[in-house]
Amino acid sequence: MQKLEEWNNALAGGRCEGLATLSTRFFLKLDDPSTFNRTATRVADLRRGNQLLDSNIVYWWATQFLTEVADRAATSRTKSPLQLVDDLIQGLANGIGYTVGLYFGSSGHAVTPFAVTHRNNDFIIHVYDNNFPGVRKEIVVSGSANSWSYSAARAQPDGSTVDWTGATGTLELTPMSSRKGPFECSFCATSTTTKDTVVTIASRDPSAAGYPFITTRDGQRIEATPDAVVNTITGATYDVSKGTGGGLVTIHIPNKITEFDLEMRRGSSVIPAADVVISIRRPLMANIQVSGDLAHTVVGSLSKSAALIAVRSDSTSVSAPLENSARLSIASGAQLSRTELPRGHTLLVHQIENSAIEIAIKGENGSEISSTSLNASETSSATEVTLAIDESGTIVSTASTVEPVPVRAPSITNFTPGKKKPTSSTTTDPTSIEIALPD
Image 1 (cartoon, rainbow, N blue to C red):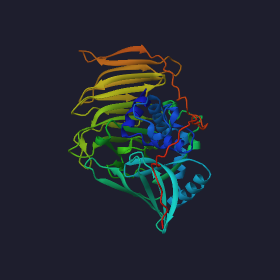
Image 2: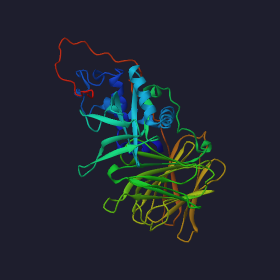
Image 3: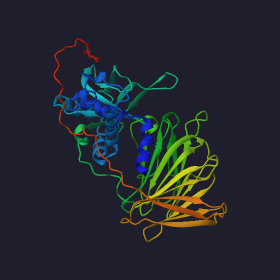
Image 4: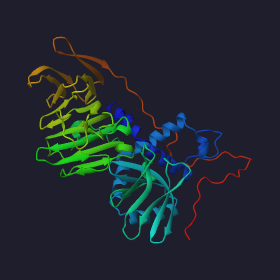
């Protein structure tokens, strides 16, 4: 349930990965528009509000987080832009479909490549950009500098556009074969098998995204802004999915770093407090997820309150902002508990034995007000526990059984090319995209 909430919020950053992937499938004739609307003869005939189409876009969007897909994308980012151009040329010539991922600052985007041409000393990757339907866009790869540029990559709220540029590590190719499956669930492992501390962040509104600021005891940090990411924590990684504001941010921190603080910041003072969902998984600890208006401090300014999440060697504490409450869920094994953390209050989660979750509420002076523990055995049935505080300050828990929910992939996730229905009519409509070879 925590993962579903995280992904549902990350979708707010954009579905470009799903749109780019499904567009590639149309390009390869692995899918046909008539599958989604029996009267459709071309992709342009499809319209919003088609439930089957929407579910497939979300399905292909979600594949970017699966290990089999993410590993192939990460491997491609180790290659230079010119090496990727060579791979793309060979792939297109042999009918191998790809999506292209571009990363700039703290954001990412996915597009569909369909041709490569040579212009002077540059290579032009012709792409379909789902943000600009009907427009042929170009990723220009410099043959001399071995870098790439993408003009007008993102439209701003004021109508202006931003050009993206990059080099090795910011351009990727993901082959369609990596999305074929079967897939192994990369997030089904319990917290006892987690090697590193993993922090994931999803903003509910991409125009008011939250940006993490992590500091360790020895002064190392990860600091994200709308335009850049600074990472000085040895061994830590900062990855973004495709989408405005990073879509879903995934941060890996080595398990040897057992103490750090995490704050959330908003892009500027004119943007409201960012509504975000943050999850943290630690070795031998319960999984914690906190959500709400959590980013009040502005990027680049000093924090005026306690860290949102304080990680210590034997505990993790969550402090709600002074301005508002925060929603909190704690999961381990098959157990999930939820509570509302009042503004300015701190909840401390300790590591204890006997497969359980212990929850304690402490006062301003650090003294314990109340505590309770929840069974978290791997073999116990799944239950949802609602926590409340009564008039005496004691934690009251109410448990209920959670019914399993079947999860089914869309019915058309195979790689069998779809067949168009025969038609007796012909069309003289011009193609929506044309390529003019350079002189």
